[in-house]
Image (cartoon, rainbow, N blue to C red; front, side, top):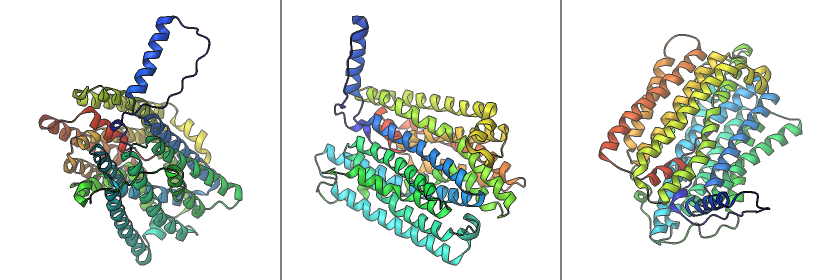
Length: 475
């Protein structure tokens, strides 16, 4: 995510005053707080956090409209596209964003133009898009994977495949644009891009519903096309993002890009693994498709802690950034522990909430498609909570540049998921248990590797803030 801590420009904060109602000491304290925020909080940090929260809320709106307007099978197909899009595109292109932002930021600090880095990354992104796109086309033409296993034979499945191919282009463009914005310190526009994408997606879905021709294909296009609108809005009148400079070898992006790509794909795959596995296994009949639709809605309720995490992250990161800006670089361990305590609390709230009001909340939001009980939802919420903990710990390994170990941690989680899914039994119960076990395994492996790394390596609190900001969880 945006490297908000690397620039310490004064935020544009306008303070409106009214008749004084506080005692002078309280006014003085408030003034000092505002001044400290202006000085220490990196420009655009709140805009980035606000954009992420807005995007997540828009995702909920998208899901609610899809649930209300699509029958079970088309709804499941749209979510198969959703899952595939948000596994493949962040998996392959988010590491490019992170490395572009880092490389351009480092060049700016040396007074060197970052244009060559951006163009090298664009070529690499184009190559990845072409390779993955070609693989999708080959699979679509030579197998029934998309038609029968993923999209379950819905009548506009061809449009869903086209939408998936379009997503490669739109998100490759969006991630490169985000990298250029964050590397150049344009954090407000970075946040604007997230918020615009979510808003345009929600408006597109409303337009589809208002047309009276809601279909899986149109919902799919409404999912994958908004990133281009977001890029146009965020880059409007933005100059100097690709200043000329000395040529950039591919190694300047990263010598460990392959490890970053591997860990990113595995992490994204694990976050959606329960639904992805169920989608592939469940048959096309009306009964199984209804149960699958209920399971998908439950997964989105269980992922509410991810939305909470993004909101808390938006509030916490400015404080961590302020410590970094004040030179308190010895607080890497305490900063990571603070994040870990908060996400653990969020995970616990998610599980307790599911046990207390899970079915009631699910019925209220998703109505007739909801099929799970409180216990089943709590199991999914526990898996989501364990995943957030693993994801948070992973940021520590990235800050310490222990990329192979990070990939190993996520790979162990993936193996654990497959192992549980091989056990005979109900597919949905297996998926719920597998999600919890795999996330817990990943978290356990990553924390052991992180503790070992911290014995021999060090990083600043600012580096941790940078990593967390550049790696938002895709809702």
